[in-house]
Amino acid sequence: KDRLVEVKHLKKYFNVRSGVLKAVDDVSFDICRGETLGLVGESGCGKTTCGRTLLGIYEATGGDVFFEGNNTSTMNKQLKKDFKRNAQIIFQDPYASLNPRMTVSDIIAEGMDIHGLYMHKERQERIYEMLNLVSLNKEHAGRFPHEFSGGQRQRIGIARALAINPKFIVCDEPISALDVSIQAQIVNLLIKLQGELNLTYLFIAHDLSMVKHISDRVGVMYLGCLIELATSAELYKNPLHPYTQALLSAIPIPDPEAEKNKQRVVLEGDIPSPINPEPGCRFRSRCRYAKAVCSEKRPELKEVGPGHFVSCHLY
Ligand code: SF4
Image: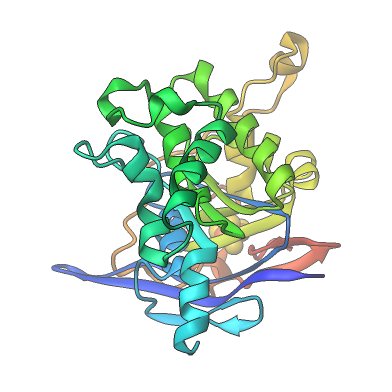
């Protein structure tokens, strides 16, 4: 397998007044070239922190991230510069992530200017090319972010990320802030661009139904841990972890007959605090199968079927 990104035992802790917040606590996965890996979980599960730490936006507390086989924390200057260009991010909130005082042209060209790419005459052409790519046009170049709808702003954010020819994009909940009617348009645009530009995505979301549509494989996070990882088809057909089962049972099935007969698993209680987590399985306070060993030992992520990993003492 051609692995573009390898995340090994990644940790990101924050010191807070009441202790240590373990936002990402020993998470490992790979992303292959051309693949979309979905990363899902409730808010506060660490998925966004994981995406940002692997890009180097946050400094990791422990563990390693490899890009094209090179460790990002020990790369030489040139490799680090290449990594910074090749690994981009699209943010959740297209309202907050675009500078209101900059024109669309300058927003799209920001990365080009920093990296010294597409200078002089090429600059304008590149901006128009990027606008076209995301189904906006030349007329939009001189305008400001507030003149656009949420969906259009997200298109501008995508154009900004793509302008410097990256290989890998962390899509950090890119559709959560958008109207449902616009969400599918943005997801379809991302799928189209992936085909045209051979992009690799880490697609972070809490909406499981959209993740299924875009992802080759899906990882599920709970309280800083990766608790299940499988191909998209396998995860939706055969969820093993009690938490994944509960998440999936909450998605409505379009067929009313199937919806009526479905076994719904209701999760009791809220997600516990990630500050000073107790040893053992982090899901046990909400798990109806919890047994003694669950409070003693944290379950390892084990491969229980081809490419299907789960972290639970039941398996
Ligand atoms: Fe439930 Fe135990 Fe599995 Fe955790 S390890 S999900 S508490 S059965």
